[in-house]
Image (cartoon, rainbow, N blue to C red; front, side, top):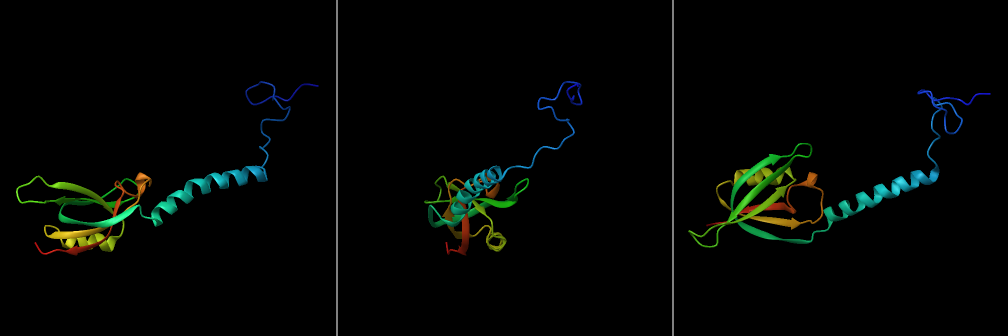
Length: 141
């Protein structure tokens, strides 16, 4: 009796026909797949909820736009000037909340204080920076 052959004409290694479906994944492999997924997702969720640092920065928002190919976030730059005529320090930030983004857009060109939380180790899809703005308020010059 001849051995069964695969579609390309070679003998099948296990003696079964090539058209036979693969066996369903075992219970152990499904458990391992879920564990790998949990080990990937849990640190990201934890990093989103626990801030490494938080604080305020004051200055003038000089650049603010919505960016991203898939995950759209608001990205901006705050020019922090310590003395008139001095070179400003640039603070790059990300905004995920549309209401905060609207408030920043209302105060463009004015001196503002941005409250932020720093979240380290997040995927780039969640924002280009690790500084996420949570609130904005106008500051008198």
